[in-house]
Image 1 (cartoon, rainbow, N blue to C red):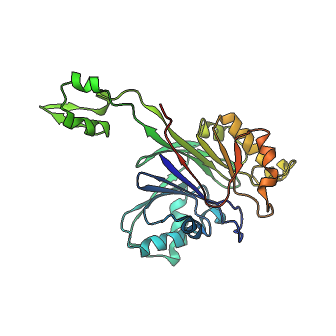
Image 2: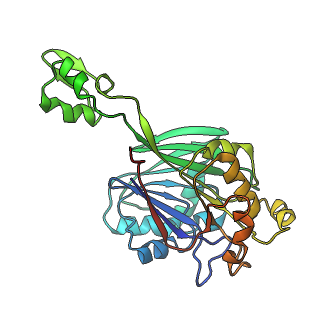
Image 3: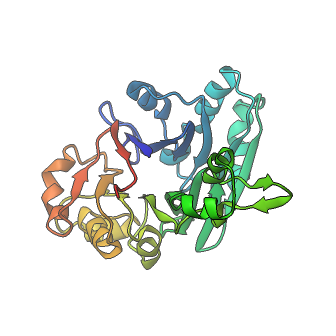
Length: 303
């Protein structure tokens, strides 16, 4: 399963009732953060989630409302005596940007490992998370991310018995480990069925609609997408500022055949996004307006 917390839903500037956009994911003791705007720590603490076990930080782009909370977050992790490295992913130039910000935090008790993106579509393996990074279309280089939790096939008892493997080895193979028995090497794929459907979450903010977003988010269980402007007829304003309207986000969700759409990254001028929710729902009915702290646990499909 995958725990999801949309800690903040604001764009451009924080408001008393709306933190800047950030998303935290948890899976089997590992945590992944996408974007880290001002107030991220407060938003997560309000939800009751700690940043100490954070393993991966994915940055969409280098506008301040998506990265200005990063140094405070890293300092808090350091003050908690963390020594385990943190992996950080983002567009080309990420290491230079973070190093510049770290002028006020030159010493941390842990290393930062950087992975910089440059291709239209890139695939990464971060622990148990399979990541697809897809280039968006904004005023500066920007990426959206799909995070997948793969699910292996069922353990085939008959195959294990046919191979003469003792019961003591089954659990190891089921967990994906190789087993040595009586001089022979046995691999998980020898006793597992076809991979089953996993979990897929997609996240994209600060972009015009593109085919690349549709490709990167295809068949997601949950698509979290910016809705900077809600009112009908706002497409010209959205195009001018390289953002999306509610209607455009809903059209992407429909084209990508996702299961559910959460709108986020609202303009500070839009006090009540829910007033325009019907605009998106007319195009993609399973749409909701995100709120700070909104959470969900995505589970594997029942069989």
